[in-house]
Image (cartoon, rainbow, N blue to C red):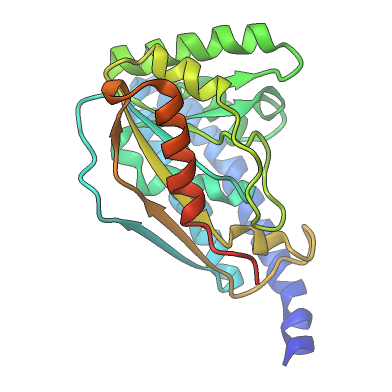
Length: 249
């Protein structure tokens, strides 16, 4: 059974990547037209559909996705979603299931070019691209990002580990970006978010992909940013997220 699963993972991975790349290319054209003709609202709708199709591509691999949100997330205020990070494929489900909150991401500068559809959205959709080799510039951009979500009542998504966990074991959380955003969005709420098992998609490498992975996302209780000192906020957020991470099998 194990060898049969590995065998069929090759053709299914090919189909998956063809669907993925086709979605990127078509989405790039659609986003260009949407933004230039319909502005922000039309562009956001096109990106929502993009992320729905991207997460649907995972179903080709037999992936199961469960997004649990039993919380009452405040509306009409800035939000900061803090999440652990296990795979690049975390992003499309997060965007789609949280689409009503207008999520924008903190991403590394390298993603701002070379990826049709994705790079365009990161540059034009309100996200912030930081250069890790230029920490002072990055902090300035994060400061502006915090002010942006404060003024526009939008939401930020940040992965404080800074890089993906390749085996499900969380890396150390960095406080700098988190702190800069919440300090410049004083009326915001932090919403901890835990992802589990997405690392398994690439556990045997980028090709072939792992089949039948069950990925879960769990939204935790929102925390008013100004309800406690930042150090306490940071420690509580990190603990809530990590306590819900399932130990790798």
